[in-house]
Image (cartoon, rainbow, N blue to C red; front, side, top):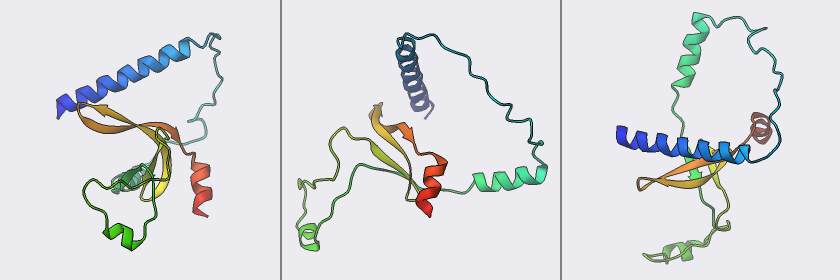
Length: 135
């Protein structure tokens, strides 16, 4: 298992280096951004709040990646057998949807490391957009 994790870590480090090189090739000089101190108005977390947060963080969720969808009649569904092809509503190369408990949270692309599939997130849906979809 640690070999798999080492390979994943190496693949992620390689991706980070490639992205850093792409950003470095952009040409413009980097500018320092002025950020607010996030801890200025927030008091330290209490033991009770930490316990509640730990309880929430341990709740299991189901994460799934969706390649595409298709609608079939029951007649066509029953005719499927080995080697059948089902046409999906997505174009090849289009990003996959990443769903948590059925809610879209991100888009990504398939990666392969040591003969195992994974997904690299390319776009994470903002919290505001996710809340809007709930209403």
